[in-house]
Length: 594
Image (cartoon, rainbow, N blue to C red):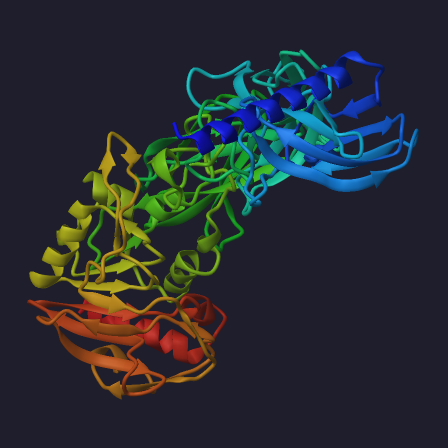
């Protein structure tokens, strides 16, 4: 070591010893910093008033003060005050935002407050004071809901049960809230909040919202709790709850009355069973043909298995109405008649169930084919939570009413029955009509449809965004769908989304499907156009707003042909008396049955 280096080293030692002596004098002498008041723990990322650390004290003698935040290694991470003039015996307050000198968030941990009295040349850490910086939120969770079913959610109401007991953990012994989310609506919304006392392991929900019985639906029992630092933890972690993002069984289904009709056709005149969930109460029922006010059968019951006889006569869609204690539901009953018919009409039962918001696994989220993860699989044969599927009124139901009113006979089945290989078969009929939005299709049915057309069949699809997205049916469960294929099962490439336009449609490529029409169609304000058909198909007829936009189209594929009418309003307009819509349906029907 050189002589100069030895001198520098000695000076550093002397300076360090001098600082140590001054600090010790400050610590051991009369207190010069009086009544310090410091937050013991805080979170700079919380949205509470405790998102900054408070540092407050007064000094005996006026001085210029510097205040530093020091980590457990003795390093200064931030300076809160630098040479600030402070009068004697006047309490002053400073705040630390939990960040370092360069503006980054300081690591979680404990920090000391170092105060320098610059005029006196003294410095010391505030005694017995530490600031805890904590940014990690609690992780509460729902352990169970009782009484619960062997599988699936808990149910309300239940006979002899006053409410659902929700057991919780991870609230850190602090006050928390049970947040009741309704998840069968979009977006999910919080409907009720119930306080959970500190160190209380459970809380009860009596099935009311705002003092009134909760509407029928799917509910998720959530938790909200704040720790000492103000960090807020929730269950589920992501809010609002999202499909596929909830673990465990924190679901409660509120159900007053629901029914699960068979999704395969019932042969006319045969006995069938409809499962009814009336929560053990008696109910009345009545059966009518869709669109006809005449009651074909009626009765009373209390059993969960309602046995009834399907009406004799022709095939058709029937409506079963069930009522109990001020609640009412309607569900479809598909009736087939095994007689010689040229056209088979297929109802989209897979879509009905795919959009049926029922919680299969008890996680508090509805299982839908539009869902994510495990919430994207669906069991067939579940109760229809909202009764009659929404599309029946103005799509497939409207088409059947029009066919019935015009004495156009048909056989009836569902895509779920075709996929399962039960009921009427595609190859038994000259023409096939997919009456609604068959949004999902199994690979087997997709192949069967394509083969049927190529072998001479005629298939008409009235749906939009239909017959493109695959889902597998195994042991009564529909798997989460994959991405939609570019072309549908009939070889058409539809354009999405629907075009919203009031422009009329005109025929620009004439063909048999327009034989009984005037070639001009108005009254539609939205439609699905086709981009193209597969290369081995030959477009034989087309109508649209212009000569480059086929909306109504037919094409030959092998020995058969397919028809696309991308008009969601077609059947309803025909029922309402629109002549163009009625002529188009009759003309297409004639080509299918020929």
